[in-house]
Image 1: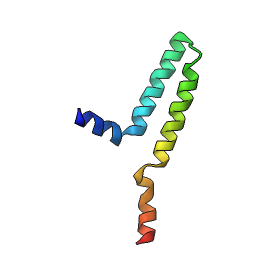
Image 2 (image 1 turned 180 degrees about the vertical axis):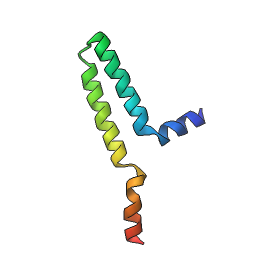
Image 3 (image 1 turned 90 degrees about the vertical axis):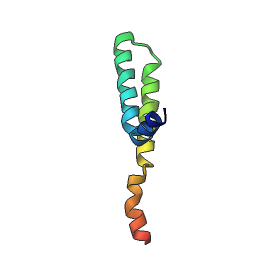
Length: 65
């Protein structure tokens, strides 16, 4: 279970994108009205998590040192 959680944390953006694709497929099949709202929330969350990812802080840490 720990290995799965570490994978999700490491590839969080891609996991959220896979969830988004799953919701897209579900929407195309069912045309449920709530799915586009959930898809928008997932995209916003993925963008936010990607923006807060530590890889963007490498340059800032180099400038501080």
